[in-house]
Image (cartoon, rainbow, N blue to C red; front, side, top):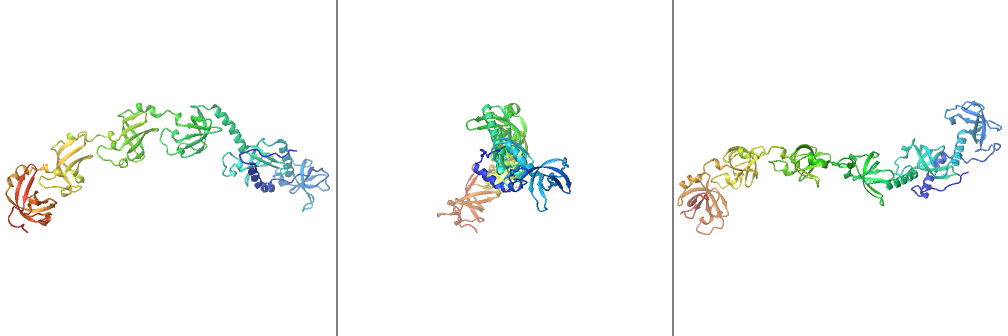
Length: 553
């Protein structure tokens, strides 16, 4: 007979495993474990004895067997699972004496129980702790699986695989090899571990791998786990790390875009540390670095089509091919528009045409331009709009210093406030224009390099200061006018159509005046004396105190 053996090291403590087995004993005892066979001779005819008998006949649902007892025994046909081939009168059977004169007054026999006991005896004679056995998982029970190795034995859930098993029921029906880690003869119980066998195999493979691995070699492995930063590849005994940056020459957001669990892949050994048992792997290194061909494939000045793959505040990254991306700076997106953010021009996934502006092979950087793929509207602006040209355009935008007039798509000219009137003091363009107005103006100058066109509105008419004003208004003359606006230093008075003169605060009264509004108000009509006419500065000085009498109401 085989003695009881102790538990082998299988990744969990003996006490822990014993507790796990004990938890399942009730289930096993109630379904699979038989009463201990009594060591009886055929003459004892005690329940639990295994006897030899001979089939006498079939009787309904029973098989009648002569065991040499005072009465014949009966075996339920159901024990044979409806397969009675070879079961006929005269055939000898080994049977288990279940009951003597049971409820029906008959001797009850069992062929299955006899077979099970003999099976346990054979198994215990054939195997010892540490042996490897083959079997099929036949049923899920509490805590693990029953595996048929000739008899049903227990495989704890913790011993099915190296990694934690979710549902042991998924293993039912699988053929597997396991190691015997415990035999209990008294209770007819055998405990298996597939994990122990896998760990030992893995240790052997790991030693072999670590003893033969070389940098630069290509090995085949299986993807065991995927994380945000990479994937762990089982090379056979040890896992290597394939970092996300070594998966593809192109841009990827997550390793799952390239790999999936249980996938078989070929990888290149980049580096390893035998003491720490760490291996760095590469996938992209199995194909040529696309940057090695960039200078010849994408020469400076070449036009190419690409896809926008990333947008940053300073520009957009455009993929020319997997692993080759270039930056289109925001300043290289339009000849004419002032782009505040690339999203005003491009969107992720958009196909764009670009021109290669520069290549930095060491840093693996390509500078691209979108506007260079289009004709520069400023190239011929001097020929199209030479100084003196009269144009018609729409007021596109206004600032405190002037208005931008659209000459054509992408070309704006600036109409400065100082070029809006010969005679009026314009402090804001809204005094004469509003956004959307169609106006006529004249081109004053063109600066192609600085991309500026200066426009004039007053230049459409003759400068009245050249002749008319200096002939009509002379120092010492009296004039009538209307106050248009007040300032801290005086008041502007309109003395002719679109012609204003300045009434300085010091010329309002013989006495001291703190504020102009103490003497005059906007809209008030005055009779004034001209102090001076300056055609160079385009100024007319006026005086109220030089006139006799009070201001008119």
